[in-house]
Image 1: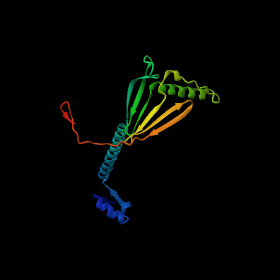
Image 2: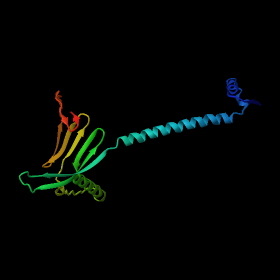
Image 3: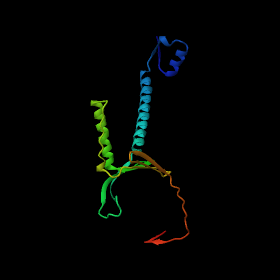
Image 4: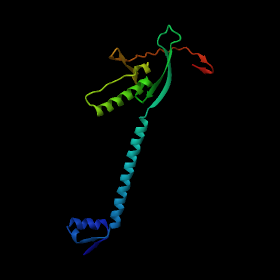
Length: 182
């Protein structure tokens, strides 16, 4: 039986169909190639995983909660109402909505799901609209600043879209505000 000490001899014998009679002593070399490919594969997987994590983190938004104060009737000065609202900001859109309505909708959806499980043919829906005054949702798209209002007026769902056209008129005047020239 022949013994092969390097890859070139192995390839020559393989091309001559003498490979079956050859005893290969290159297990260490083959292990090195396998190990190198394994490390490259792990590195590629790690880079892809890191990229996906970064992509997921960069798509996260911010939520701001405000206490919104308003008067339903402007002639009555003592009719001040307060409600918490959420402003969710994402890279391409933002949403403004009442926190109580959002919680009420979530509770109603969970109630409907539970009723479907117990009695699929009979669902009773009770709304708690007395708790919230802000019944609309405002969606703003960036960078076009297209604003969409979603509201409900007397059992009719309404969608109002508005795309403002901003025209800037920059004048040559300057003004000093505090220590800054503007």
